[in-house]
Image (tube, rainbow, N blue to C red):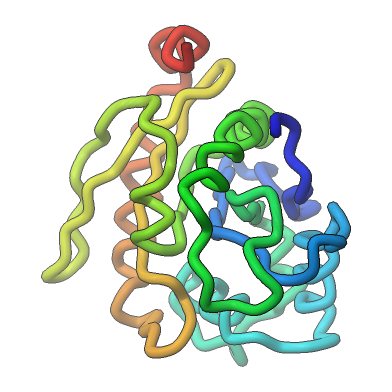
Length: 205
């Protein structure tokens, strides 16, 4: 597997203010026949108000630091990119963890997406996903948000680099108010990342 199968959602205003913010989810659940545009279609339908799901709602709340009823869905999703790392459906229904082989097979596609989107910051949506992301790159600065600290990781891509940090999966029991300060700290730290990485292509060999 190399090219991304599940195409990333890229908002129409993504990067217009040099704020290239990538939301990185773990995986899709559904039949093997799930179409390649599933991420885009589901996100567009959510933004249009055709349906609701706490996963997308909590992403909005934790990134903006506001309850969802105070936000415009279309406006929010126009400003971010969203990509699911694992590039095949994991199972018919949620609750099944991706295999190590699934994570490994999705590595090249991940870096191709970084080359294309050139994010400044990456919000990783679960500890399990963070633990299975590629080891290429280098440690970034530790960020602090209240009584919580987070290690960060700098991912190189062609012509630049992005700072990544993880939060708990935004599903049941997720408190966006607790984790919003971490998003603020990540974005602040990401703004200090130099534009050019140190030999990003060599780091991938």
